[in-house]
Amino acid sequence: MTVRKFLYSSGGDLKQSATTDDLSVNTLTSGVATGTAPFTVASTTVVTNLNAEKLNGKSAPSGDIVGTSDSQTLTNKTLTSPVITTITGSSITLDSAADINLDAAGSDIVLKDTGTIFGSLSQVGGELVIKSGVTPTSAITMSGANVTIAGDLTVSGTTTTVDSNTVTIGDNIIVLNFDEAGTPSANAGIEIERGTSTNSSVTWNETSDKWTAGITGSEAVIILAGDNISDLTNDSSFIAAAGVTYENLSANSDIGTGSTQVSQGDHLHTLDAGSNVTITANATGELLKWNGSAWINNTLSEAGISATGHNHDASYFTETEIGSATTSSGSDLVGDDNTYSNFTPAAATVKGAFSGIDTALGAIVGSYLSATYTAGTGGIASKDAVYISANDTVLKADASGIATSRVIGISSGAISAAGTGPIVTEGLLTGVSTGWTAGGPVFLSETTGLLTQTAPTTSAAVILQVGIAKNATDLQIKIGTPIINS
Image 1 (cartoon, rainbow, N blue to C red):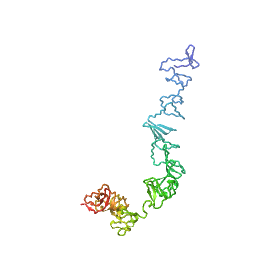
Image 2: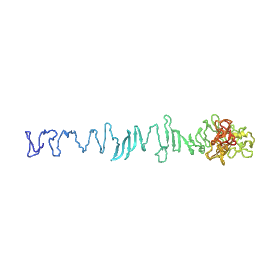
Image 3: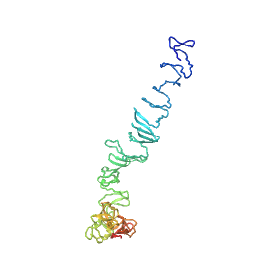
C-alpha cells in the first residue's frame, strides 16, 4: 500500500492533501494476507517511538537490543551454552555460586600475558600437569595426593616442615648452615628427637673446632686420628675414633677429672674383661694384673715373677739364657732374623748350666725350626709346602715333577709376593690340616702347595713324604727323599 498526501476526514476516509505529505490516522489496518508486506517504506531514517511486539518474528527483549557488532555491558545475564572465542577487557571477574568448568576438549588451557605464552594446564592420564615457559614444559605433575616436581625446588622461607616417616635423598653430601658467608659462629649438626627422653645429637662445635656426640647438653668430644687434643684438658669425657693411639694423647696434660682422669704419660688400652682399672703410683717394669675384680698395676715381685731369671725346669728358659746359647761350632743360637735356624739339637752346647735345651727350645719357638725366605710370584698361603726357585726365594711345591718337588719346608703363615716370612724346615707344625689319620705318612700333593695322606699314583709323579701326622691337624715335619713313580 502506497500512501501519499491524504487527509483524515471526520467520516473516516483518507483524503489526499494538496499541501502536505503527512498522514494522520488513529488506526491503520491492513487486510493483506500473510506473505505480502502490508506496506513499504523507502526511507532508511529511524522512526522515533516505533514500537513492535516482534522483530523478524522474535519477541523483543525488555531492555536494550544489542547487535552482533555492538559493544554492550551485560549485567546479570545468563548465557546458555555460548561459544566464546575471545574475551578482552582490562579486568575480568568470574564469580560463580557453583563450579566454574574449563574444558579444552583434550587440548591445553594456555596462559598468556600480553599475547605471550608463559604456561599451560594439561591433563595426562586423568591427572593435572602444570607446564611453564614460552614453550610450556612439564614442571609439576599431580597424581592424586602425590606431587612430582621436574626441576629444582627452592624454599626461601625460614621454616620448612617435612612430616614424613621416610625421606630418601639421592645426594651423597648434605650441606648444613648453607647461608653462612662470613666467619662461622653457630654450631651445626643433626639432632634426634627421642620423645620423653632427652634428645641426642652429632654436632660440629665452632668454639672448639671439634665434633661432639651424645645426649644433647652432655655431648662428648670425638677424638680423630692425628688430632691435637690439648684443648681437652679437664674435659669429663671424650670418644676416641678408630685409629687414635696413645701417642695422640701423651703430649698433653691431664684429661678428665677424678676417677676418669687420664694423666700425661698414662697409656690407654682396651681390656677384654672387666670394666675397672686401678692405677696407683706406676713405675718402670710394672705390669697390669687382673686380681679377680679389677685390673691393677704390680711389680714383677708382687706378681710372683722373678726379675733376674726363671726357676725353670726342662719346659722353658729365659730370653737371656737362650741368647747365650751357641751351636757346637760356636755361632750364636739366635740368628739375625730372630729365628733359631742355626740350632742343631743333637750338637748344641750352651753358655751356662741348665738342662733340657731340646724341650725348652721347642716350647719357645713353637716346637719347630724355621728360616726366612722371600715369596715368589703369586705368594705363599699359610701351611703351603714350598721349594727354592731362586736365591732365597720359594714357590709352592707340587709332586708333578722333580724340579717342583724338592720341598724344603712348610710355611707357618701367608707370605705375599715379594714379601718375606718364616718357612718351617723341621719340627712340629700345628693346624696344618683336618681329618688326618694319626701316625700316617703325609705326602706332597700334585696340587701346588698342598699335602695329602694319599701317595701320588700318576705316572712320572714324585712321591715325597714330608712327615707324619701327629693327630688330625698337626704335622711332625720330617722331609724324605723324592721318588719318581714309574
